[in-house]
Length: 380
Image 1 (cartoon, rainbow, N blue to C red):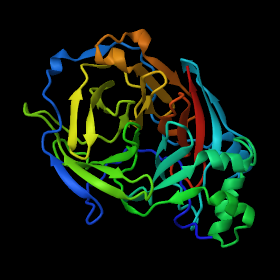
Image 2 (image 1 turned 180 degrees about the vertical axis):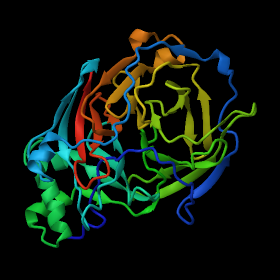
Image 3 (image 1 turned 60 degrees about the vertical axis):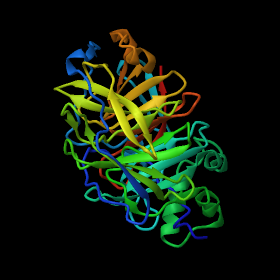
């Protein structure tokens, strides 16, 4: 069985290294938006005086207790409960592959996307932390979990299967799992952490940025079938008043297909932008209400929960959320901001929700060869 294009990657690794823009020569048609940012009056931005739970990034990311006791082939789930703020629980759903073709080649995941029905997961991976070369993997989650016998059954089986495959020793039982994983081709994926799914048109998008304000970056559409780029939109987050931002490194879409990204402002505040991203161009407006206190130091990702119409902002060991409707109307209050703080010392990478509101979070044990897990997140 040829798994090189039929295997998946799941999980994320996290520092916010900013990457070059690159190009998709021959891979995707390109259009350009020179002024993707609408004019705004920054003095009119209203900050929600939410409680400050700010979490600093640990000097060294921790490994989990199950990894320390069981090694790479963990058989029991990790469970984390919030220690401050709103109650939230994280429980391992799958221990994802670390080795597929050679040792540790799937150890640098960057983003997770779950489809509205919860049956499919897409993961963006980097080849290495010092490169922008990566790929996207499609994971048939529903069929894989069924083949495993449930989320908590045979939790080591998937890693053992891919490990055996890397050594050309995969059994028929191993291949019964590997067939539910499809690995896409490599290309310039930027940092990879912005991979997002637009439920309105059922398209995958991600952004690439060099991290410099006012310079062009790109929005890239990817085929959910071939996992190849099909369209590129070059854009600058510049408006006609002279405001300049670096192209966004986070991205999420709501039920209506509107795109969102978040950016840090000042020492601890957070701003949110809403707009459109499609084949014809990219356009964003600053939402005129933001958070006085963001969840933490590391700007990992943004997610939209269609079940409760909330935006979630993810940092290491910290997640905050706010209702979109109230944010748009500038009516969100401190009580509307839900924040959950954990004490795992793990790297929180990406978050994604099903239509029913089930969250999936990617954790990683820093730049290691193991510890990548997909967990179910319960945020009340």
